[in-house]
Image (cartoon, rainbow, N blue to C red; front, side, top):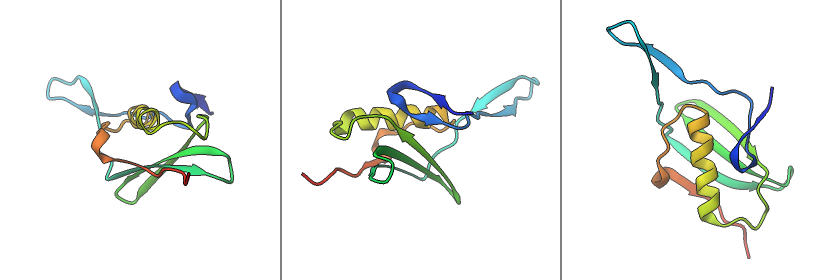
Length: 100
């Protein structure tokens, strides 16, 4: 099932991996992405957020306009990271700008 989130990003899964505390309660564990890239996918005419963590790669498309600024693209990538259960670190996000 596709879920449309903020900034028009589609997510096929939302999974926060719970871990048990010593008291038996569950706590959400944020994973850390090794690499996050935002680039224009010309085939789909949508922005692509690519999250890499070890060997796992998650690809999510966003319905933002082609001329969207870098700041908004970074915010969309952060939102996508959070939706997928990853820590959002703006410094780790690489935005591939379109040629002018």
